[in-house]
Length: 636
Image (cartoon, rainbow, N blue to C red; front, side, top):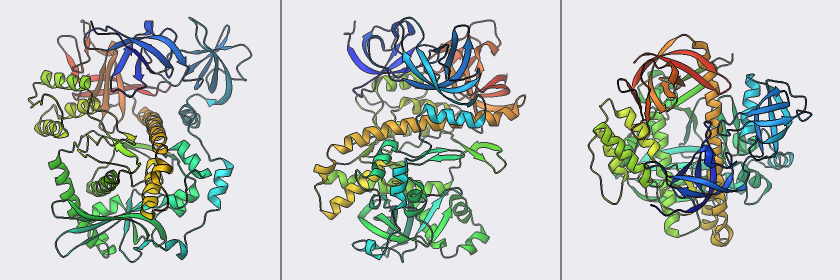
């Protein structure tokens, strides 16, 4: 019998009543806690728990003590009852409804979306609370979006003093250009989406006589305006990231900065931090310089236009004849870099993402997100700059914030290999270690098989989540020893911090260790937490827009693939990226279905549903309350 252990951690709940314990010490392993062992603890609570002997390979625990309540305010739908009312939380992980006694409803009506403050947690009863704000009627689009902003504590506006401080900032002058490399005569361009407003990276490229490429990645110097511990910086630290929705952005910085002073607009002088890299024909950086600079963007290009030029669009080639040489060189170099990363074992998961578009009439379109060559060019150049900067600072042994991606945990790795065995996939397994190249080889060998999509999905689920850290442990997915986020200081706080560190180190005016030695720890922790929160908020908003979109197709049939199997049904993802649930009770058959967690299957002995399986479904409805589409399988 394994020795029992006392662990402190936060609970991650589930709508079915159980929870997982996420240990505070950062260990990779999570612990399953059944509802009967929660002892009144709820989603988000900080608890002390004891490990128990679970069934099979699952690691389990039970709550010993609630140390701190994690959620004291939440958003939900108000309903009335004989003794008062109750609020059903939007956050499905929060299992319990909140009881609202008579007189505590702040004029809320049944069906209103409200903000509820929890006042007490009676034993063996539902939490009790008070309604503090009515957001609007349930299912109203504006109300639903507002409720998501409240749920994830996303601010809709900046404090007055922050806006005032940003308003006082002025465009750079010749005085600001002193002690900077002057790249204003260099042909540079920004390449972004059609609707982009903030341009924080620009590219320059030329071919040298020896056949190498001189690649310049020029990043907006936000740190020139947002100084350490200033009022704007404190607000940026709190937000830590910009959050992107289909019709709205919650920016990290005030508009004066992100859409004006720091945006690398065409034909305008802008302050930058440049990473100038000499890259040989094998894709290796042989020399580089990181320097404060000034540029004047030659052109504001879009991914669509660049892709069309690569594809030979004669009209655009004629229109942008001054850029053609640079775009040709970019395309060449990107091919070299892609090949080099492939040789190094970088894992390129082929997992579909969807893009949501809303036209001027408010019509929603959901389709697969583009990942063409134009997108790959920018992706490769940003990765190269991030690696170069991270290596530079690592060997200087200065305080820094790295972007890390840890090796999969032993438990998840073991489950993944068990899954591969179940599929009959052959692979070479090393005894003590796993390398990115091992995962890459598995993907390559499965590339032309029916199991390819399935293996992609399960491999993704077996990996750790990337995060920020002052300790450089490498990036498993990219197969890089050193990696950071350097290229987006307008929308990511870690990028802004490392820009300050690099500039102050280069200037030699202050002790970087003294100023940032402890700060990088709090900045990395805050940025990782806020990034997770932003990702969940974006997913919630996207799910809502997808539900609005698919509600127009009730009764119609689509092809899809099984994207999830559970004990209560099968999730199916359509080609456009919309996901829906096929409930267990709609699966025809006499025998009971059994869910196999390790092999991601649901079977009744005769029929089996598994990840990646192609199916034909009919849309039978949408559940706006749970933001889920409802499907039935038409053809198995």
